[in-house]
Image 1 (cartoon, helix red, strand yellow):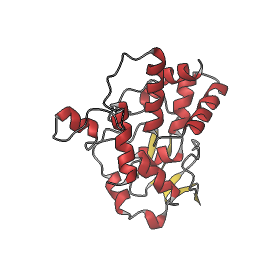
Image 2 (cartoon, rainbow, N blue to C red):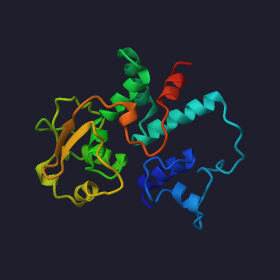
Image 3 (cartoon, rainbow, N blue to C red):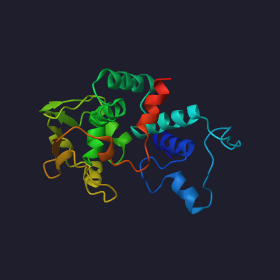
Length: 213
């Protein structure tokens, strides 16, 4: 098992959630009662008895879930998204989701050019993506409604891209337009929290409560 895959599995086990809706998640195996499946969290304290969560614990868990879902964004960067969401007009939790959904790696995942957010981040890092005809290798690049996102010509026949486009387990959300033949797309409108196809329940309002304590 690769370190990257092990890291994703640890996130799922720690949170007790199948964050990305993947069939091979250890959470799925545990629920099915498969042999060798571990129902407890990772690490030496993973099997200790769990107490009833406090309000702080619930808010922290909501933050960890949202951070983890977007390829485990670092705390410093995630806090910057929150601060920017506060500065913007409107609902802070909706603003936070909009900022996260406009990340270039998130858009690549939503367009089904990568099978996971982690794969999407790596795909962008390796220079396979063009924004308005120019190569962009920064996963956190913020995509605007007017931007055209396209897989680089030499990368359009990569097996990982072709496999991701044909994945049956998820659909492209309505706020995104994509042409899988041309491997090109764009954002149609501002993503709303209710539109985002999370496989598990997310609570950005609790994330806002966590940071505003």
